[in-house]
Image (cartoon, rainbow, N blue to C red):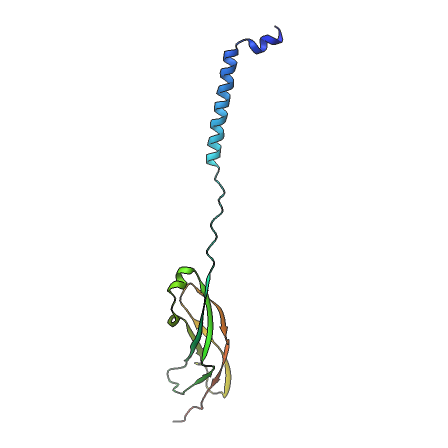
Length: 143
C-alpha cells in the first residue's frame, strides 16, 4: 500500500473525523472557559472623608454631688474626624463632643487632663488640638 493511499483512501471519513474533533475541542474549551471564574478586582473602597470642627466647646463631666465650678483652658478645641462619605454627609457639629472627665478628682490645684471625644458610630478620630487642657479646680466648700 503506497503512502499516497494512506492520505487519499477514505478521505471523507478522515475529514469528518477532523471536523468532529475540532467541534468537540471547541465545545470543551468553551465550557472550561465559562466554569473558570474570572478574577475581577473588587472595587476599591471609597476614600474616607475628613471633616474639621473648630471652636468645639470642652464639656466637663464631674460627679453629680460635686457642685464646684470647674474651668478649663482653653475652653474650645479643634477636632478632625473621618469616615465614609454617606456618614460624613449626615454628620453635624452637635454630634461631636469634647469632654474632660473630672469624676475621680477630689482635690488638686492646677492639673492637665486629656480631652476625650464622643462621636457617632462609623466616625473615626483623626486629631484633637490641643490634646490636653488645663483644669482649674476651686477648693471644695466645707459644709
